[in-house]
Amino acid sequence: MKNAIPMLIIIAIGVLIAVVDDLTRKRRLLRYWRRPCMGPEWRRIFPDVPKADIRNVLDTFSDAFMFTKDNRLKFSPMDRVIDVYRTVYPPGSAVDAMELETFALTLERKCGIDLVAKWKPEETTLADIFTMGRRGQGATFNIVIDGHGRR
Image 1 (tube, rainbow, N blue to C red):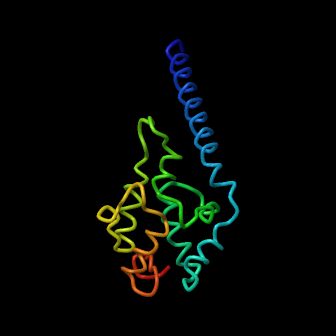
Image 2: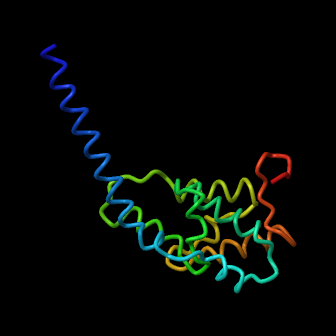
Image 3: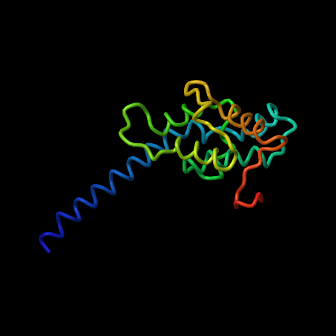
């Protein structure tokens, strides 16, 4: 029993640190979450593109960063990927969850986009990535969900 108390204290401290970190992350992301829907902005830049194609790109991005689907349309086509990353992990953060790597691998697997080869960290926007996908896939940004070409 005596050994259990220090272990419980360590667990409690770990949980407290995780909760504080999560709340801090959520507060930093409010700059995006407080925005109105960016769907009209996407439609302005890509007027002839089906809404589903735009949502698919934003789903891929949101999934990589573990954002909810409810927030996917809070991202503007002009948002730089690195800015979102730095919002989640400000300079000095020790470890990340490999969101950028996950995003790049998913884009390559689902869309044939070699993001690493085209990546310009200080410049690449979500619109740039969407455009890469459209060029590589022809008429649509065909993200394969189930491995059989169905969405």
